[in-house]
Image (cartoon, rainbow, N blue to C red; front, side, top):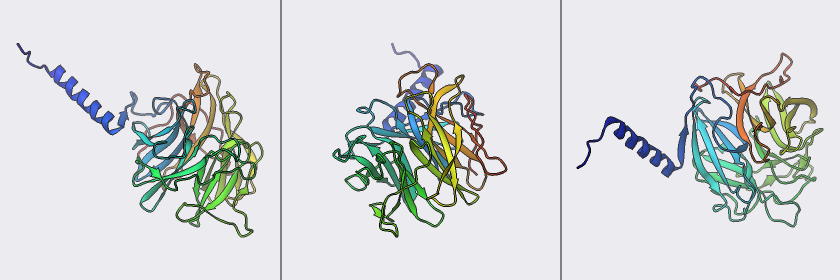
Length: 337
């Protein structure tokens, strides 16, 4: 004899069907208990090196999937309308689509140009010019992909000025030019991208890669413009250690020169360690800024155990960045009007 379904059973069936649908499409909504604030971390899982950006009145985060290098072979993305509830977009790009990338894809940087989205990434963790890999580019019609290889080969596959080809950031200057700012091993380069992102435009002196390394730079460059000034930021210390941190300089152009001002993001032994490799978002039409970064919970010692978090970024009356206070609460809900 069949039992008549109860309201509870019907709700369970509907919930299971919705979950199955989300998993099938690779999209999973991650709700928060407290809808008034984001909380930290922003979403579950080990994710690092987050690039945060705004597309069409939505916040997006493109992080590294933090795992041993041979397992770190894909990217997930996350989107939100209010910084509180995040939707996970699974495997927007993996090494199956990038034939030359075998392992260790990380630190994605994304830019929209016209109706296309270009995702720059590092792959293979090359240690010298005899190994194959470096910085690649993928392209898609939507932020969530799917992405395909734009070049079929790395964009940067050699060491220039001592910079390991990793930790790429694409900067769109106010004059319309696009630059690739990148580099590990304590060296940072800037190069002007071609309009179609297939290569570089040499500078007037014939060089392609100019070094803009400031004092104490290690990796993880990021740049933004505020009140006509160029804020150049980077990570210091070792990424597996507790003292990973973010410092910055201010210049009059993307080429600097950049004189280090000081640290603005670092560990709080009561909250978390290893706070670094960040990005910055500005709410359009406002002077509101957020810093999105990764850190390591106090309970974790594994270098790959990193979570993506968010805090307010503010400035003093002279335009200097105030030290960031890392929290468990994160930030308040904020929709883009």
